[in-house]
Amino acid sequence: MKKCLFSILVFTPLYFISAQSFQGAWEATKTNETGVEVQYVTIVSDGYFSEAFFEKETGKFLGTMGGNFTSENGMLTYTLEFASFDSALVGTTNSAPYEFVDGKLHIDDKIWSRLDDGSPGDLAGAWLISGRKRDGEIVKRDTSGPRKTMKILSGTRFQWIAFNTETKQFMGTGGGSYTTVDGKYTENIGFFSRDDSRVGASLQFNYELKDGDWHHSGLSSKGDPIYEVWSKRME
Image 1 (spheres, rainbow, N blue to C red):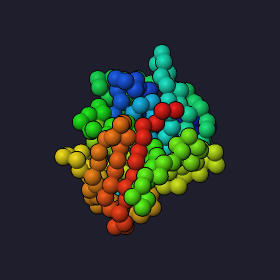
Image 2: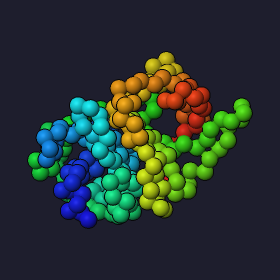
Image 3: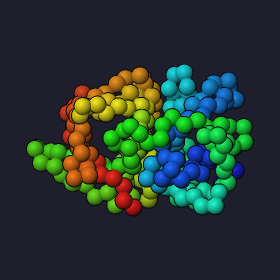
Image 4: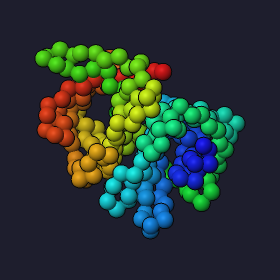
């Protein structure tokens, strides 16, 4: 299992970091066996991580994985909650060593560079959708169940993932860069598992933090009005 993770993705150094001191977004590139340059972007926040990899030139989605992690004495221990390319990996726990040199993360032949340190985004963190407004009323949703929609943000990068830890099903993901300015949250789509043609599009929403929750409203990518409530992951 561990060999599969290293040989296919070579992703592990990104999780060998302190969530408090090194959280943020990281990137690396690698040319695959067909000569296509693949970009890897990992977001680390609040003890959770997500990694997405896609064709650098086109944004064509190739895969994603993520979950929770801890690090101690130069070793990272991580448990996968989702893995789009192999559901059998969901729920597995592995440990691996790391090296952090001159502000970059090194492992084998790959070097990971920092994109941000968790700032300046107002919304940096790992969030779960916890409610939607219907007929003028906010209908709450239980976030403790196995079926989750998570959005994880660093200071400048975001990724949302829909998954089920019980069935190990992966339902979809998307991500890219974002900004928060004057109550406006703008997503710039860098990859989208369900429709590569959405790459390059920008979506703007209203956002507001109320009692620690993120209230998110505007129009979806299909043009439908939405009002969502997101709460920080606590478990």
